[in-house]
Length: 302
Image (cartoon, rainbow, N blue to C red; front, side, top):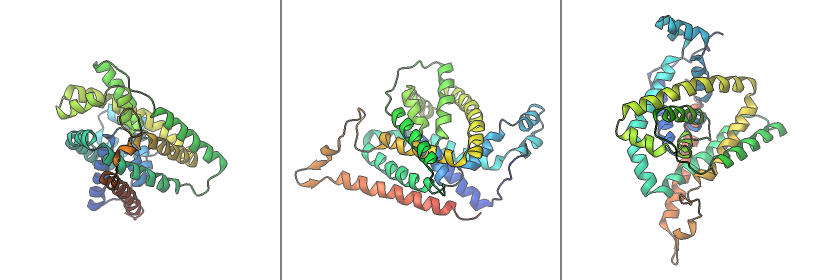
């Protein structure tokens, strides 16, 4: 199979692409928010999946095993992947501590921003289907129910062994490239979210390397399947992914504590509405505005 045409980009386009990668890495640190959502609303999702799919193509692997690097790179949309990866990795290493602090000290404000972001993303993504037929509504419902049930699962206690770290990387990366399914949240379910945050902050390269190997194998394997599904059943997959994002709102609802109890009454005082609720509403609107801005930018021609 011939490689897909690579979009022509100039330096400003690559700077913007790096910023999109940084945004993907930022939200991948948040349990409940997916970097795939950012890729989707910024208009690079299908190119990302197609580029990752190339990593498992026979022509690329054959050239790589024969150390014909120039021939291998010719098969690959490597400038796109490298720029995106640099932005993503930069976010993971620079923001891990800050994100953990924000979630610990200002969870309602953080979740409010992302709640607005996801709500607007659902609207933006759903527009990519020109006509919603009953079958597409069915796919949306399947995605919604599946994500809703998934995010309601409780975390488990798991071993900190390297094989399980590898397995966690394999599973989490598959979720990270799906809009609405959070790789960070799957790490929470696997009992490895805080473990990996500590590894990032302490620069534990052995743990990071094993996790990255698992993620690499996972993303190559899953992108091939996802790319095929997007080409073969494009509108159905868009509807399914839209449902995933809708279902994930259960996890992102701001006014719940770790035990999923509704805590919004605590934000009201006898004098009226607490300022935290106002701040939360403003941040949710900021999330909506950011998505609209990103969608507008993504529609601009290169």
